Image (cartoon, rainbow, N blue to C red; front, side):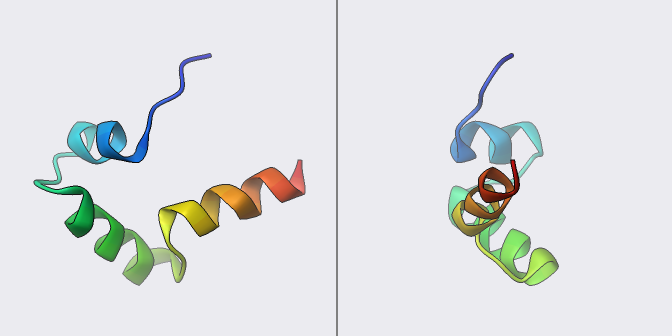
Length: 44
């Protein structure tokens, strides 16, 4: 299982900066990428 950091994910998705990715992610999901990861881990 490969693991990617937020910068790698944002680049793979075509975002120019990690900051832009984080802003779009938060607008879309209502949480930051870090908050999302924590919420997913707590459900496992």
